[in-house]
Length: 115
Image 1 (cartoon, helix red, strand yellow):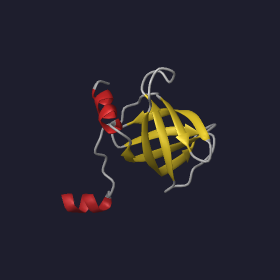
Image 2: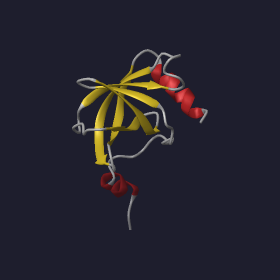
Image 3: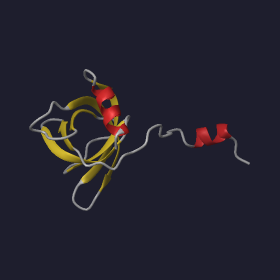
Image 4: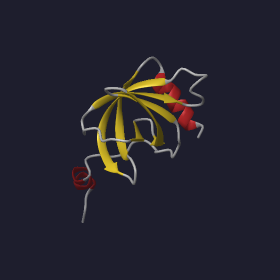
């Protein structure tokens, strides 16, 4: 018989937020700026594609555009890469938001509540 304590030890990472399968434009600031798209997003992380692999543990700055890149100020966040996997043409990356600039966390949370 499994107890809650045993389950928590077995699965140390528990998702706290719902993942929304939303395609948003994202800029990943690494050694250069790469523009891509999200596969899904939650209040604490994001999945996005790049043509190359970032190392797990690497920190990057991400800019999320909720509507139209030409008309809005992006949500800016520091993000740590926590996983990656090869797709057919690109590499999917899972990033955990470390912190947001200004009121980005609140804006993202409100946006996701309306999805």
